[in-house]
Amino acid sequence: MPTVPSTEPSLREAVLDALCLPDPQAKMQAAHALWQRLLALPDEAAREQALAPAQSILAPDDRVLPGRPAQPVLVPPMAVAQRSPFTPEGLAALLHAVCHIEFNAINLALDAVWRFPGMPADFYRDWLLVADEEATHFGLLRDHLQSLGHDYGDFPAHNGLWEMCVKTQHDITARMALVPRTLEARGLDATPLIQARLRKVGTPAALRAVDILDIILRDEVGHVAIGNRWYGWLCERQGLEPLSHYRHLARVHTAPRLRPPFNNEARRAAGFSQAELDYLLSA
View 1 (cartoon, rainbow, N blue to C red):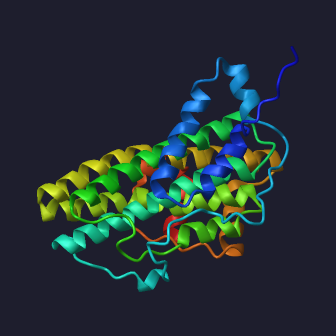
View 2 (cartoon, one colour; view 1 turned 60 degrees about the horizontal axis):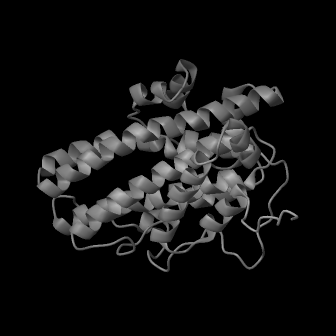
């Protein structure tokens, strides 16, 4: 009998489907399922074939990128109120802010997989892993929020991460430079400071948040390292000097200025050179 062609979407098409899901729980589950689908392939050759098709994938005009729930309300960054984590409401607001970052990080990783054709299979594998781990982070934070009587969507949030994703949608080198290596790398610097405040709060809920942030920080070093790896690979392929080209991209796309203190230990573990660390202090 003739073989019936599969109607299942390709892996990268399925990634686009997941990106368009508006429900956070469904998106989280889809990210995990995509990673498991990759792992379930029988061998490395099958994984490479599934991951590295050369063709572009077009997003239909009727699809919203990214899919997101009606809540939280998105406001300018300066309009997000700063609350003290020493109050129950303030602690919940802080956790919500980090939870929102992790929800956006799922979208950023999925977007890198479907949007940019012609990259090595390892590129897609790396970002599928990132999406899976970001989904885990989101789940941990959302569960903790719910244990405090709140949920994702209860507080306003801003859209800065996705706005940079849109700015760099036509330039994969800019995407690697300015999303994982810039915006997400800020988390390497900020997380220990947040943890120090939470330890001062000292409640069981705050200390549970410290433990979750330990997991996130560990994984985010790897995520930023993936951005560094592919930024360096793209610069080498194009004959670009990485640091000077980074400065150019940061100007062109009006990347936010990064301010100290910097977590140099985590940044070195993520692959930043000493010249790049010195540049951060002089910028």
